[in-house]
Length: 199
Image 1 (tube, one colour):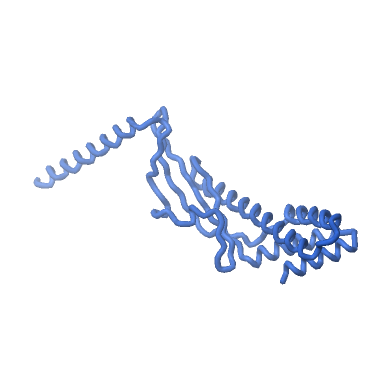
Image 2: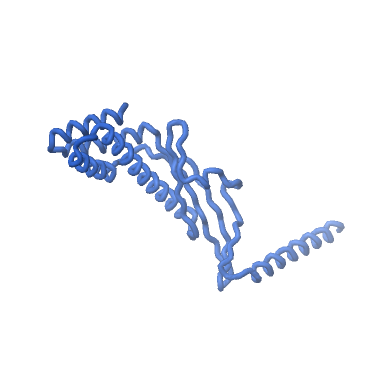
């Protein structure tokens, strides 16, 4: 019999707490958001880092915000991470090959321009393999709408690639580009640049 008053007190406390949170929710403006769940429970540090290089691996982050389904959000975030990675690798490969060409070709400007166009072709046609998922994070967000509330998800995914996979992708793209050279002098200079890259 003594447990009945205790149960009633607990039920009353829960009811008051829920009324209080409902009142706060009604008072909050339409469009306001509140994170109600995090998976994992602590926000990882990589969330703030779009690109990281460590221990012979490259890591890239992708995001999807405000999605209605967490599984879909994670797929979209992974696709965004892969897109960011491929774009960054293209820029890096273009920069490295351009630098290598400048190192071997200081005299003939017309050949240099031709080689630069091959560099652009190379970076646009780079094929990357060995992409692996590294980590994921998601937040469940309560959003106040005109009709009440709904839940949305903010998702982040980090993918990685080994440095050797990046170097192999760059080498394959350069080899393809070299196969299109017609000018012997340009071909010779491009091979010198390739050898410099691979040192």
